[in-house]
Every structure is written in C-alpha cells, then in structure tokens.
Image (cartoon, rainbow, N blue to C red; front, side):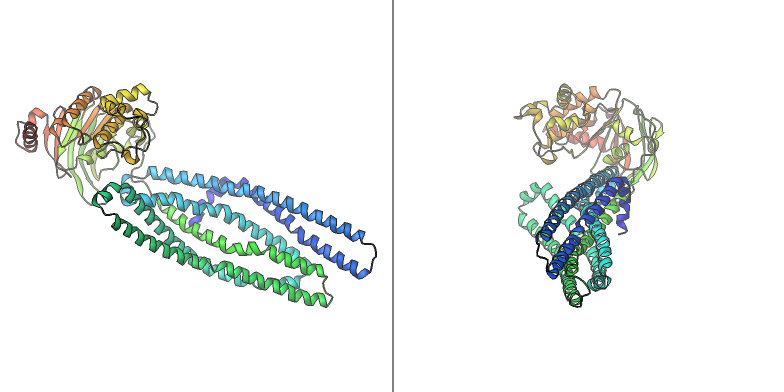
Length: 584
C-alpha cells in the first residue's frame, strides 16, 4: 500500500467526517450485537420455564413479547445508524474523488507539450477516470467495510470470550488460515490489477484514436483491419481480466467454507457442553448468531483486500503523472505588462522526442508594432520560433528576451495572456461557434464576436448556417471546412486583443482572394502589436516589416520584400514561382 500513502492528506482533510463515521460505526455495531444477547436470554428463560413446571405462561409470554419489541427497536436504530454511517463515509469518498480528479486535471494543465507527445490521450483519460474510481473504492466501501469488520470482531469477540472462552477459541480456529490465504492472494491481485488497468488504457487509447481518425479509416476502407486490431487488444484485455477474477473468485468460497466450519464447531462443541450441563441452550444460539453475524465481515475481507490492491495499483499509475515535473516552470510571480519587443540571441533547440535540432544559433529582433514573417521549406524550423515565443518549449542554448527581460524570468501566465496564437492545425471545441470565438475573451459581447468574425472574413459563412453563431460544432470542429476552421481560430485570436499576434501558417486552406481580405484587416489590427506570420506564400509575407527565410533551422536570408526580391536566393525563386502560378 505504499502508493496509497500519497492520499493520507485527504484523510487529514476530511478527518472529522471520517471520525464521526467511525463513531457511528461503533455505536451501530454495539447495538446490533445486543440482539444475540437478547435471544440468549429469551431461550434461557424458555428453558427455565420448561424445567420449573410453572403453570402461569403469561409471565414468560410477556417477557418474550418485550424481548421481541426490543429486538425490533434495536434493529431499526442500528439500521438508521448504518444509514448515517454510509452518508458520512461514502459521501466523503465522493468528495475525495472530486478533489483527486481536480488535482490530476490541474497537473495535466501544468505539464508541458513534450509530455503530451510522449503519452497517449486514452491513457491520460483512463487514469483520471477508471483509476480514480478504483481509488474511490478504497476510501469508501473498503474503509467502511473494514471498520465494520474490525469493530464487529472487537465487540463480538469480547462478548464471546466473556460468555465462554473455550467455545470462542474453538470457533476462531479457521481464522489464521484465512489471514495467511489473504496475504498470499492479495499480492497476486495487486500484480494482475496493474496489468488489467494498463490494458484498459490501451483499449481506451485505441478507441479514441479510431474515433478521431474515422475519416481516414473510412476513406481507406480499412474498417476490417481496425476492428481486427481492436478485437485482438480486447481479447488480451479479457484474458487479463479473467486471470484477475480467477484469483478473486477464491475468496468467497474460502470464506463460506471457514464460516461453515465455525458453525459446525459451535454446534458440536457447544452441544457437548450443553449435554454435560456446562452451558445453557441460549449460549449455543447466541454463538451461532455471532458466527453468522461475522460471516459478511469475514467474507468481505477478500473483497476489501481486492479493492485495496486494485486501488494501490491504480494510485501507482496516477502517482507517475502527479510526480511528473513540468519542463516549463513559472519562475516569477511578478506582474508582467507586455510591450512586445522581442529578441532572439544565438538560440538553438533540439526536441527530446525526435532528437532533431530544429533551430541552430539564430538571432533576430522584432520591435513593438512590427510584423515579421517566416518562410521556408517544411521542417525548416518556422513553427519552432513561435513555440519558443509562447514558451511551449525552452531553448537548449542562447537567450530570448521580451522587453529586455529573459523569457524564463517572465510570469508565464501573463506572457501567454499577452499572446494571441493561431496554430497550424486549428482546434475547435464541441460547442457553439460563438463560444469557440469567445474562448479568446470570455467576456466578449455579441457585437464583439460578430466584429471579430467579420475581420476574419468568416461572418458570412456563419450566418448562412441554420443557427448562425449558435451552431454546435462537431468534435474538433468537424462541422466546418478547413478554411472555416482556420478563420474561426483567427477570430478567436483577434477578439483577445493581445499584444503579440502569432499566425502559424493559418491561411493555408484559404483561397487567395479571402487571404488578401484577411491580411488587409490584420494590417489595421496589428498596429502597435508585434505580429509573427508563418507561411509558405509570399502573398502572406510581402507586407511584413521583416521577412526571415529559414532552412534547416538556420537563417539564410532576411530583409524586407523589396530587398529580398532583388537578391538571388530562396525568396526570389519562391516569389517568381508563385507569381507564375497566379498568372496561369
């Protein structure tokens, strides 16, 4: 249970609710264990009545009626206390589940982009859902039934020893066998539970990727192959689950066997003692009731052990991510008001996952209000530049400053609030178009949303939809075309009104005429703002104050449009090629 020690803080947080639940548990068990005592006294009274030859039955009848009413009252009160106990402990487990999910979710948001490159979405989702559910069972049913078992044993065992120590010892003979069995079986359950959860993560990941890539699957007609892959994975998962439940299935038959042996022991030894006149008949009935009252707590030991072992295996998986240190740390709490003066000094970066050196010793500067465009072949390092400006990654060497402050010393939250980023592959949420645009500024009015859409030249497309701005988009914005998704993403960045605007090849799916209109609108918007434009088209870059050409992570040309078209090199060749294509 080493992994579960991480959760001790939640026991501390909800200690009063849990302690009250423990108190109610003790009280309810003390009451419940009064029933065998009353039954013993009732049977002993009947035996005494039979042996005494008393003619008046009314006395014994009244006593039995009173005992019956007492048993009923005790059962009702014990039942009510059990209800209160469940409210305390089970509800607390739900509160802890809520806290743990929030903690994991917050950690997921802190972790860097590099982390998400190395881990699959399905696995991340499984740990915050299935694994947390397993952990909740540890806080709820496992704790509740463990306390039930402990206090029932303490109170019941004390009462049994008080009445007849010898018979108690014979009754409890099977329990050491039970303890040893649990010790060995629980170790097996822990190992197999870990494997089961890992396969569940694989299944979740496979399904998530299939649903996300359904267009590709259907376009290539590879449904049978995908289904075969899923079946193979599902079969392996089934085998691992069966392997786990085979071990778990040993518990209940073992419990029933041991309880049966205890009952037979009570009847045999108690019967001999009764024949020898050592105990009254009521003691045998009381002991049988005690043994059977202990049946469920003993039987549940296996279930509780299984829950605890599964929770430990799940918490171990959760801890792997909770203990992951974000690569990008916020090193400052000072408020940062961005002006937009950015400088790269001998910057280099190599990505961990691919070991590709994306940028090699590059230097340039951009002043507030300037627009800089980056052009180059695929893989030249253009997107790496803007990823570093947003501090999605940190440099391996060199220095980036914003307003003369090293980027690592700037409050990360304030930095990203100052940036409006339109990525190469725009992401839209399964929500209305209006809310997707408002994601850039959640206090935006309807008119501000419309104005942003107009500047992004997507307003007319939106109003043509049946529900215009209230149109609900499919997952990842599948309802819209590629160009519409890009323009909605541009509107999202515009409405934020940031100091730094980044457009990462976000006009690739837009026709030339629409591109010209958007760029004209952006010229007005980008006044007094620092703007980065990444593109493969000269038309997107020609009006920039500075154009930088990258190749293999190095700057091979830089200057204005007029300067570069008069120089031999990549820019001039690209300009002439695209001009020829336009004329044709």
